[in-house]
Image 1 (tube, rainbow, N blue to C red):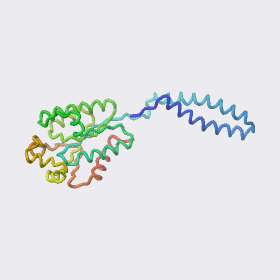
Image 2 (cartoon, rainbow, N blue to C red):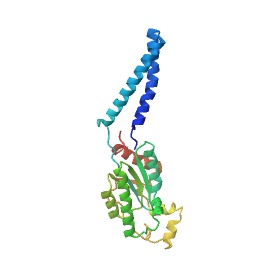
Image 3 (spheres, one colour):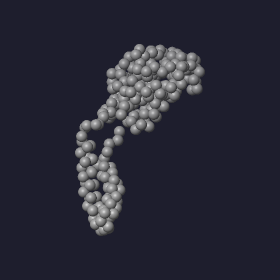
Image 4 (tube, rainbow, N blue to C red):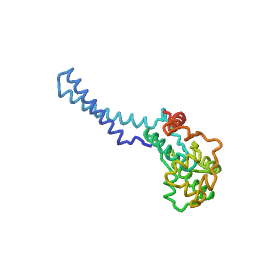
Length: 242
């Protein structure tokens, strides 16, 4: 989030007055034909009005009328591995970021690289997601929203995230597991099927479909562009309104 500093307000006043003073000098000279009088009038007006502009700007800074509070949200993407969560979340994040809205991006892969010894049992996943929820809450306390993409396979952990964060928006990226296997450019489904990867969601561990997600994106039926448009339409109606 950006705020107007005193220095910026002052510089805005100076730049405006340079332009306005030049205009005043020209007008006075045209009316009276005296360059010295025109310059004196321009200088006096500049000093007075730079000060008055600065005071006017700072006064409006303190007035609450017309200001809109930013309601930080938690846009939470959940779904099977390789369902399309990260790809769609990245695109949505870029769309929001381009509008200068205060936003941060969290993805399961990036967070696990920071804490590499986290396991994949239900207890370990739930504990991990509590840490993520706490991080998101900290961002929200500073009026920063978050786009997060995590498999988050258990309903109770998603419920906990909803309770810990504000304005929780659950986006269920729905995809048939066979479609996910086709997208398996990393070979992780093959490794899971061979038993190399334990507690793998959709193979050796369950994925509990969200009961009441805010938005459902079926990647077997719509493309990435349509998915992004659907999510952005919801956000603009609820949180990105001017």
